[in-house]
Length: 306
Image (cartoon, rainbow, N blue to C red; front, side):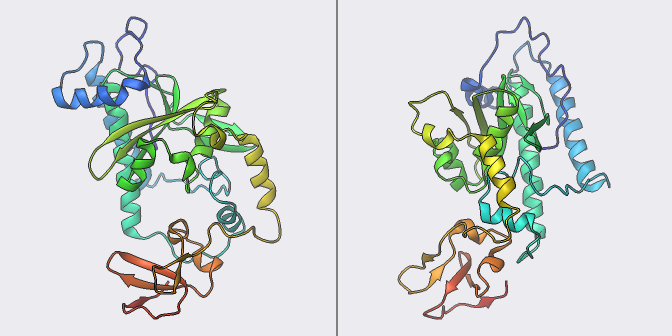
């Protein structure tokens, strides 16, 4: 996210407006886009102007020569990723592949979706504050997306597969990108115990808001999210300085009944997969490339270079 919100936001007078909360956010956005009716307490022209300025700011940073290279190896945004990935990243291990053009377009598209979601949040009468506020824990810094109605919130555009984890609340159990640790860092810096994600399925427009509360000891995810983020940061800071890498992030999985072994999906998208698996081979299946760590039966599809 690259937004810079005005302190006033879009509410005409926040002291006179009953405070909305994130529990009604999705329904309020759906109502807004269906009826096109804006609450009288919302300054819609201010919301539109702010959305336009934020998109212009994003485009200037992408294409206007103002994009600053972030040379930090450890950031709040990556502190929750797997140890082996972070060791490779910190120690400048050679990547298997550079970011491709279509992937960069996808990221840009995601940023635009996130700006749209924040516009809809404001226009539906909810409060957005603390956009891109700098946070720091034990020397690790990062910029939070925002607070929505006072709750530290990350805004995400995700695939249909990823959306399910936000919708059913199971993100904490399958979090390869470290979203939980990232937002826990922001919440810790703000001395908050609850935090959440406003997520959109970018393929069909479905929205959801997932909130976790560290103080809710009865929640099924409590044991998974209750780790101390400061301990995690200190562990990573020490781990990346070790001379040898930690164990691999994932073990290979059987590729059906072929006898071959393939990378776990968490490794498939990693730029360091060739460094971790030097004998890795890739094959062009109709569903996309498949990365095999062991080939017993040669696939009857074209092999591609990594």
